[in-house]
Length: 235
Image (cartoon, rainbow, N blue to C red; front, side, top):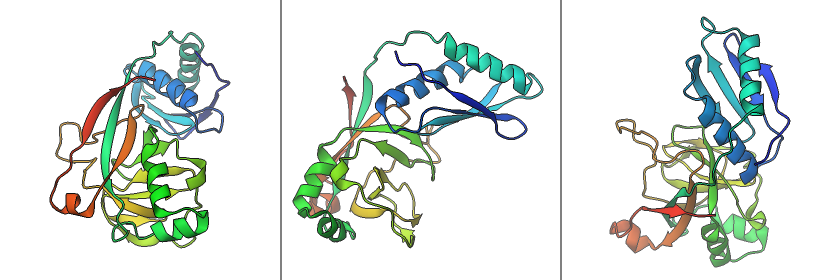
């Protein structure tokens, strides 16, 4: 079980920023998730906001001081319990990579020196780690994108990216859960909705889950001949 040198910073009147090394990796994800799970239900913890390399912890300042809270968190991490390597939930998400939906696919193919079919194969063959949910409710930040697909974000973000757009930005790929502005390169569309504000669990996926895309045709998309698959993933 990995241990890292963490930093603890005051982050406002009643929050603390805990930071890990600046790297996107499955090992750091596992460590952040384990630590988050251990502290989430403490009486003085009101909310935690995980990210790639950090957790923002909002605490009740009427119960505990910032100094004592940091000390408590440090002790928990130092004495963290051994965690078993439990299987993860693997979500298999359908994507239509047709050029009518993947408006930036040709740009990626040209700049990367790859064919469209090669991009689809690279993008859909990887099993991605869901590191955290952010930017928009239900937007999964996925780690594990093949280096050959790493692409800088657009210099001029677009004002309107459609819900369900599957896109690449930097070293990451993700799914837009709602219509919004965005600066990532759109390569496809999924009909699956990852966020329902009226649902018992509004966000379908969560940090620590796995996700893999699979290709569907334009006809399958239009005829609703697709499904979201949920499996158990063993490393």
